[in-house]
Amino acid sequence: MKFRLHVVLFIFAILIAPPVLARAVTAVINYEDVPIISASGKSLQASDVEQAIITGAGINQWTISRSENGELIATLVVRDKHTIAVNIPYTADKYSILYRSSDNMKYDVKYGVPSIHPFYNKWVSALKSSIDRELLRR
Image 1: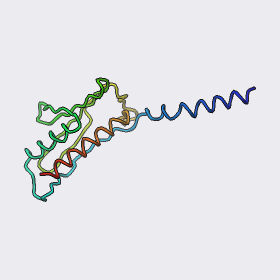
Image 2: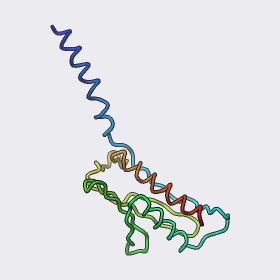
Image 3: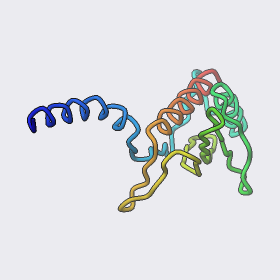
Image 4: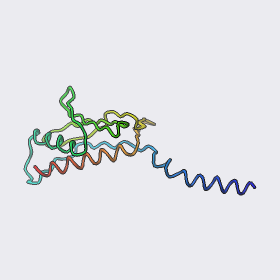
């Protein structure tokens, strides 16, 4: 009888574990000082970089605003349930994508390491890819 109970519990654990693990948190990935690369190899102006960031963000439904210090802030709202925001400081030579805030994304700092739902990193990586593609068009 106990053996059957253990088998049933084991099978139940195997069936339940993948969805639970899929929602586990992961370390926040920030992209710092990403070099600006243009297709022509020419240096770009800061205004060209800004336009590439704005266009790249729009491709993935991010909205752009500006902070008090002139940095861009990109915000993504997913299914009216999850919201993430990143700071995007930039120059003519480099840009960064840095965690700013989030809602309903399990953000926490444990032992000095910020962690968040893994979809955050997926969405921010897609943003970076879109920005990089737009920079290559310049």
